[in-house]
Length: 471
Image (cartoon, rainbow, N blue to C red):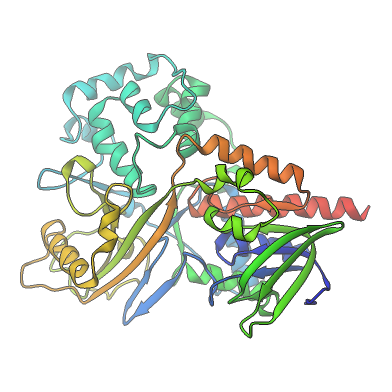
């Protein structure tokens, strides 16, 4: 790779999942690319840890094969990594979702009989479901998920299904998140079919291409942890094409493209000229990264709110006969407990805990209780141990064999009413400054599937422009 005033085709800012996946597909197409990362490691929020027989994540725990791009990436990585990066999907037995109500967890209904019997929803709201296909469409394009749920399903569905689901995905408030941005598939069901139920039925009957069938919606990880995805991408991109520990990164337009400068770990000023540059960092980093843009131009983007989240992995060498075969358990806000929810990684994926044990990931804080991240480690350990006993039923004499705490002050962006202005600002800047792409989870969704899909689309667009420029 040539630096210090020499040319590079594409520069990617950020060595998280979005940045590395973009660079991976560009390299697969034979395009020169260099990735610049502020931290001393790759992966961004993704980081897999190993402690004895426990394998756990301190960032995202799972993804969903929500688009063909996810399946295609994993299939390609398996080949390119010579089998070191292998897709692992959760078994059907782990599909069960639990919701806390009163003094215990209840399974979300999975069929007609369980829907009738569940104590999660009121009898009136259960009856109202029958009328959902005939309710009028909404007229407010910025209707929140909470408002939409109340209008179409009822309060108990909001309290005991949607509220905990939003806590699990966004660590946010359904009454603040706008449906068409935060839950676009749900929004499209009503917009296109007039009903969730009618839309889901019609969509299930629509023929799918072989490529569309790749989007199985299954929960996935990589065998051995998500860091194996990151490492496989980085190995293919090449260490010589990735700079870690870069400080004071700045991007400026030039007459023929872009100039990126940064200080390396020896405090030397480095310069790369490129035809294209892709940013994948948080919205809050853009003013320093793109100094040629005014505060007024960037304010719709930098005003993006993030929810703070603490993730606490708790491992047990012995389950004492407990049944922990589920994807996870969520806690509605009105139950007023101290956690947002618990995932059960060892029920979903192999070799995450000792054979007789289990691994749990507790999530704390969010928009609901940001102050929880101020607790010290001793207070956090006491809290999760108490909930481990109370909510998961571990006997009083048992103690966790592993507690690992990770704090993320800016964990998950909140797609609120300001999202439309943010997306328009991004589009306007990109239209004005050819060759600049502003990506990351400030747009196009927050999940791993969204990140992979966005990266694949970025790479396709850049590859197309590259070949058009050579004609």
